[in-house]
Image (cartoon, rainbow, N blue to C red; front, side, top):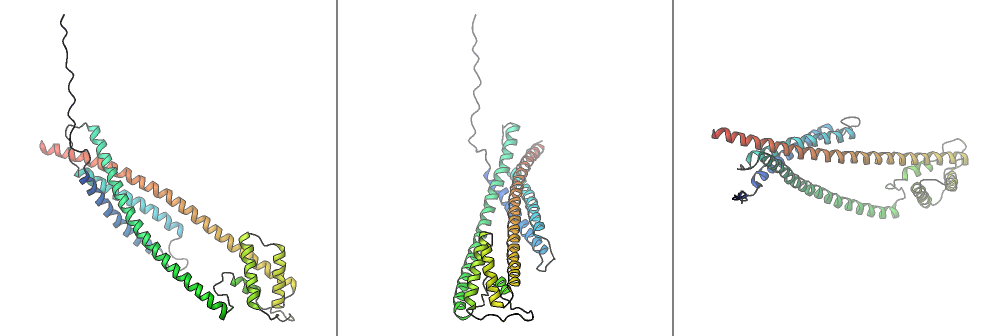
Length: 300
C-alpha cells in the first residue's frame, strides 16, 4: 500500500509594510491638539467670566474646581473623538488581514494618536507653567529683597513693626486703657518690649500652646505698659491669644480643604484623561471600519 505524503501549506510571506500608519497618527494628534487648545482657551474665558473681584459675587472656589474638571472631561471627549476619527479615516487600507486584526490596529492607532497629542500638550503646558513659576520666583526674590532692605531701614528709623504679622495682636495688648482712674502707661524702650512679646507669641504659636508662665508674664507687661489692672491685663492677653488660636485653626482648615480639593481634582483629571484615551480608540476603530466599508462600496 502506497503512502501519499501531503505537503503542508507554506505560511504566507510576511508583509514588508509597517502595520503603523504614522502619517495618520500624527494627523489625528495634530487635530486633537488644536481642538484641545481651542477648548482650553474657551474654558479660560468662561472661567474668568465666572470669577468676580467683588466679595460675594461670582462662583466659589469649589464650583470653579468642579467646573474645571467637567470642562477637562468635555475637552478630552471632543478632542480625542476628533483625533481618533481622523486617524482611522486617514490610515492606509490593510489587504489580506483578518477583521479582528484590523479592528485591533485601528484601536491601537487611535490610542497612539491620543498618546502623541497628550505628550505634546503636556509639554506645552509644562513650558508655560515653568515660565510662570520662573517669573514668580523672580518677583518673589525682588519682593523679599525689598522687604529685607525696608526692614533694615525700619529697624533704625521706626519701631512700628508694620511688616510683622503679629504686630496687630501686639497693638491690641498695648492699646492705652480708657477706664477712669487707670494708671498712666509706663514709658520705656517700647521697641525692646514689642520685640520680646513678638518672640514669645511666635514661639508659643509654633509650639501650639501658650504656657501659663508666658501668659502671666505677658499680662504683667501689658499692665505695666498700659496702666491697666492686672486682672484686666490678663483678660486682654487671653482674648488676644484666643484670636491667634482662631486664626491658626482657620488657616489649618483652609489648608486641609485645599489639599482635599487638589487630591480630588487630580484623581478626576486622571479619569478624564482615561476617558479621552478610550474615546480616541473607539473613534479610530469606528472610522477605520467606515473607511473600509466605503472603499468596498465604491469598488462595487
